[in-house]
Image (cartoon, rainbow, N blue to C red; front, side):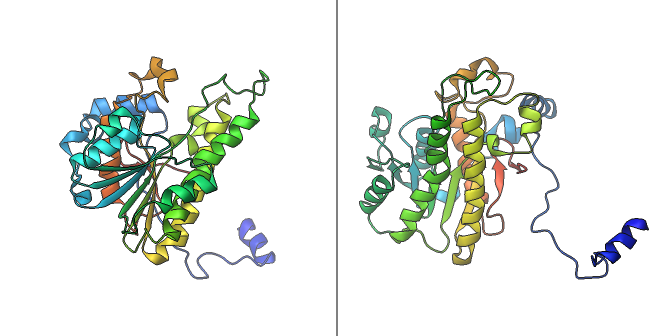
Amino acid sequence: RRLGSIAKQLGVRSMSSGPKLTPRRQHPAYSEPDQVARFASAQAEQNTRVLNIDAVVDTSHVRGKRVAVTGGNRGLGLAIVKELVAAGAKVLVLCRKTSDDLSGLGGVDVVEGLDVSSDDAVTAAVATIAVEPIDVLINNAGYFYSGPEESVLKGTMNFAEQLKQMDVCASGPLRVTNAMYARGLLHAGSKVVIITSQAGSAEWRFTQNAGKGGDYGHHMSRAACNIAGVLLSEELKGHEIAVGLFHPGFNRTSMTKRYEDIWDIEGAVEPSVGAKRVVHEVGKLSLETTGGFINCEDGLPIPW
């Protein structure tokens, strides 16, 4: 009663007295932040979506579609390219330099020289692409600092590396998407996917980084990446272009090898499995879900 009186004095209307505000989106459940607990729960429940993506994966939506992938020359990006080729997509890879594995794939167009941290390099690479609609753009190129763990207490902060990660992981997807749109490659019905990370969830830091800092540049760059993706989704939805922010899950790649001691307990999977999870979620992305932050391990949203 007292709070109501104070609100009245301040001129604040009761929610019940004015128009009701409907939240943009309500989620019945978020993905579990504790990765060990998440994997253990999936095992206990025999969660097919998490444990056996082959049993539920649907890649039919990319058959015959033109799909562009950045950083598709190795790791998860290469695995995504292989999955797309197997699904019958027309694949275009943009990367710094091709690899033997990528060159050995048939039916893939490769554009080299892409440096997502350079305006000129991105513009030049995209300028070589034939002006035909791209149905799906997967911004996969990223960077992870592998030097000493960053710590204020230990005096090991690396601000130059933090800025580099921000440039590659946050501004990079924007550079590529901007260049693609400017060249007329994105159209109504196109989908833009940004491979981000659960590391960009501020809420999950209270669980995954409880009592410690670490990997400042990584977390900061992914949080910035996420806000960029949400803004992009709001700008492009009027043009019927959906934007999805995907945490691909914990994959056993060279980028995560420094954490190989926890691969098993946290349910890390081979890149081929992670790729299936990503491509599966691409099919679920729509204008109704645009701007969502999704954990591709279980298909559930991640809180900001």
